[in-house]
Length: 325
View 1 (cartoon, helix red, strand yellow):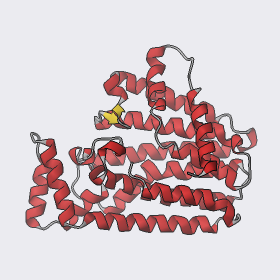
View 2 (tube, one colour):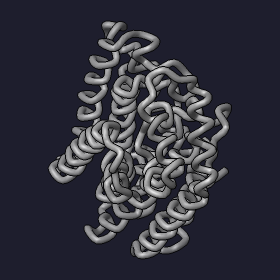
View 3 (cartoon, one colour):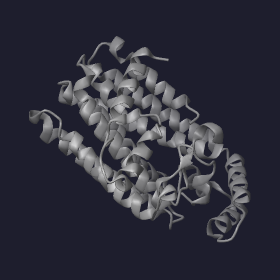
View 4 (spheres, one colour):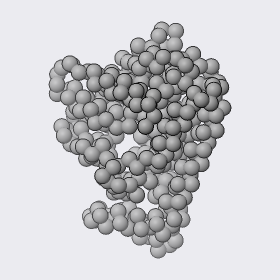
């Protein structure tokens, strides 16, 4: 384990433990504290601190925005789970299952507001630019979620449309986390932009890996039910490729499962996974993940700081690509 990353993770956990700790009413804030207590990888706030550290700045200057990014991320997950009717998040019941839909909506709104309170802690000279990045990120995530929902009703979603959707829904959060940390460390506009693009490419690879783990992961480590995307007819990269590459009989059978209302969930997951195997889509997806990962490394190599200072980000990048959860 990387010692510096471990230190940053400890600092983030300590800070998150204090978020809305004493706020009342508990019926509003208990769901917030619950979802924040689930843990998770904390990749986004970690990237904010690591970006500041990359430019030799005390990462503590970025702790407020790092918390803002993590709170907003978890807010989006809370609402995402509600819209997807998901019942498990990080191996635990989702908020709308543990409480109810209204609690998920209102507690999520409270989290979004709290994230902006933390962004407001940025030093005044940098606040307009950081606020613009954060707000653009927030709107992009909403756009990505809408595309994701729109795609559920279509069988003609293209690979390019899908990549744009996950760029908006997932990758911009990583890119923005890095860019905000860089700006707080007085990085040049060129280097801040390179870090943003690095985050976008890592984010695309990260989401494609998530799609792969939803089908091929171990439920004991993945934290969600395997096959959840299949049951929800999510237009993932794998499903889009299956619809495009299946022969007539395979396509007909796949469309039957996509339109079926009354079915055995395990049987549906088994059929779709077998089809992916027949079409060799796991390898196709892994190759695309590798493409975005290598592109991210090229972008990071162009950032004008000593290579020695980049080793922590390189370590994190590799761990994200090798993860099983």
